[in-house]
Image (tube, rainbow, N blue to C red; front, side):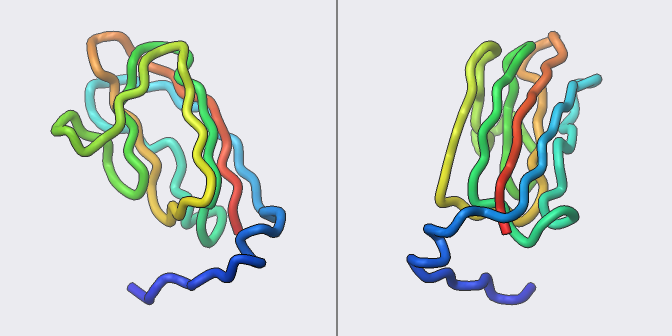
Length: 109
């Protein structure tokens, strides 16, 4: 895998040219891919989403798991992060028996 591109402060302050929205609902207890960032842009630098149904484990750049390496986001809440670097999968997995739904978007270059 090539070394990541180092960004200057000026580059990071520029508007992000790429945008991709997503909506995904789980259908089983296994991890579900929400979006493969590398297939739509070089890297995502900003993400925002809302978990509409069911609590979800969420993982950036890998498969969501229940082993403590994934973030838990309760239903009815959301998450926003800027100045980050996601280059692979964003995946979700339901916490309990209720299927979950996530809706959001990523911005990047």
